[in-house]
Length: 113
Image (cartoon, rainbow, N blue to C red):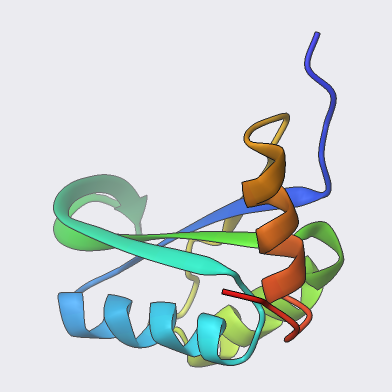
């Protein structure tokens, strides 16, 4: 059975590529994440204001240390263009130890890469 690490993967979606890239750059610049990847477009289906909606969105996948999660979520909520943004955090249960160490180092502003 895999053991949990102290690295977290966070996902959010944004309504355009520029907004997604802006969020991704901002979280890395502020050392809230080691890496943020933008992909899309994707099509999201959801219920909002009592109706099923369907919109094109861009996904941002963010890797951070667990002890930076609260600050990351606060930053995303403030910078995000949506009223109620999706911000979902999932623990990383394993992976390349060197990569996981790099994530931790980068979120402290002491990265070597």
